[in-house]
Image (tube, rainbow, N blue to C red; front, side, top):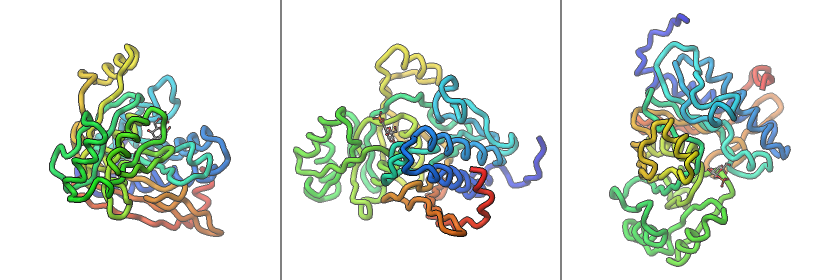
Length: 332
Ligand code: VTB
């Protein structure tokens, strides 16, 4: 396919595509938001996936989905390996979570987002859809200030010391799951606070990057690996530290991971192991949340709020958009 684009591919990824990926997450968010509170997770997710795929296929990229809705057999769209874009332009890796927090959206609870990342081709970790242990803190600490294999109590103390505060001044964000009871008890044993979330650990990790405004100093727990890679891209742009390990506790998961190039099943991944090239990250609020406002349907306007980040400069932009050509959105 021919293209009239004469912008050098590198510049495209660095700058021009920044706004393009905003369009993608905006459209996915609007589509999902129409189904907010309808109690139907699948329908909301499908709407976001359809919209995201449609928009991705308009972009001047040769894109490959490396983090997607799942592996080909179980995901009809935006599956890992799917090619997206107009097949002209820079070769890029795409990571998507068209509706992060499907349950939050279905129940119309705070914190669901439409999110994606784009990176130089071959630079994102190809993670299978398995669980991943994660720990994350924001920028400004010495490398290794907290560690995945240290105990939660130890990590709280180390972080408190680095901040020059008492452990009781630290808040740790944790997914509310029975599997995290030891983490929760360990954190609380130091006097630190736990903030529990029911879903949405991409936004959860991002909260750590701005503790003064979010009140969250650290994220600890086991969530999805795809969400881990997306969060790593965001922290790559804004700064911070993350350590993660895939949970490959069965022959089947180890085989799936091996097929994607994972040679050491016990490897601890830092941010640069998950996102080693230049990258972009965007997320649009679906329901209202502490990071982003949700989609608002007004009489003649649809309003969205998106955060978009670039690793090259570390620029973080919050884009509040008012969409007036509503007929375009009736496709969704
Ligand atoms: C997290 C969270 C997601 O899955 O990754 C979580 O960020 C982990 O899995 O929003 P379990 O729900 O199985 O514990 C989600 O909640 C999405 O399902």
